[in-house]
Length: 283
Image (cartoon, rainbow, N blue to C red; front, side, top):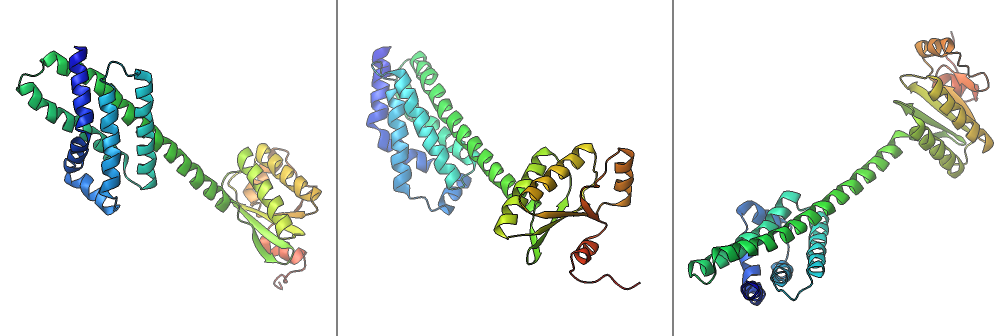
């Protein structure tokens, strides 16, 4: 049995160029079109294919260290996954591409089987050795895609966070931070960090926190606002809170929440008037 496995392994390695070329020729129309759109050089794909074919042959050789060979499969899968994500090739197309290796190799050795060079049990043993290794490649490719997707989500989330705390300079030394949505501990920290950073960069004296877009101010939210105001005060920036709606004010009173130590105004317009910018309409 070992001699037969060695023969097949060596035959795969000897014919790696033929198999690598057949993999490219065996692509279905959709996958072929996707790769063509990316203008991938056939020579690079051919060399990459030949490398995997050679590794597949190695796993059938009795003298090869199976763990070392497995690491070669993992390395190939990792590089394939990274290349696919970098070039925006879909996971489906990438896995389909890998499956072509199995199909092409079996097509070649079906002819050997028909010529009675090998017993069916030998081909079954070959399958039991090769298939798990190709599954290892697919697993590693999937892991690379998952890692890439997590990175993209993290980047998108960071960009969204930045957009969720816009600092809008309206006069020299004065900026407005309109807050929309819920304020949790994480977002409060982001507001604080952004306000302190932009306050220093823009050399602000005042920041108006407009909370008209905050749906609910409970004990936790009020505490977060206090911390933001206190941190800004310590850095020399005065804060005015605007936009506390009447229904929220009633809820705050019922909860015993007070903003006595913080300057508040009902509207942004009133806050600007308080600071000497513009005039209130004459009644």
